Length: 208
Ligand code: NI
Image 1 (cartoon, rainbow, N blue to C red):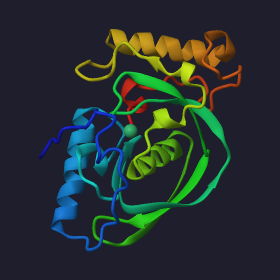
Image 2: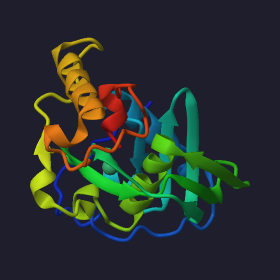
Image 3: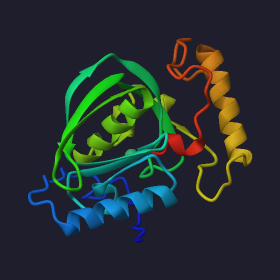
Image 4: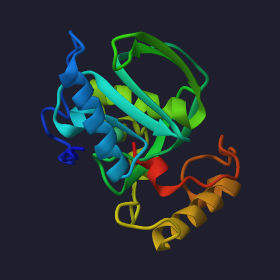
């Protein structure tokens, strides 16, 4: 188990660079995937891309609703729909803001054994994949927030907090308020219902 440091310097050249395609998939690739999973879990978060730990390679991991995904050289081959929702990032701790993304994506890439895999995703999982693939091109979600005034600081992130801690409650309450009353909370959702309905995100679900 190796926990690597997550880069939070938003000007870091690996975080901001274009990651390289992985040529041969070997034990070092698999070690990288294991390290990404370990680091993501401890953070905790639901997605992590290799450039976030200083490795300029096209590798991402995602763990969401009990499913684990590791993609080497991932590409989005199909996408549809559009939705705006709040995001966060392990490389920009505490910051959140609304990003418009496709609601449905089909991803193609290779797994840890080099086998070609395709995954269809929708909703929050589709958002996570899009966010992680952006990291491979040096793009942070903050770059995609159209109205910069909507970027806001969230007091407490998930790190070091048990579920149900103060931050969790506060964030859930904020999300519920937003979900039921979008425009009134001034978050730019214009009263559109959240695609996730009334379900409040767990704090780490916003950490991509
Ligand atoms: Ni991120």
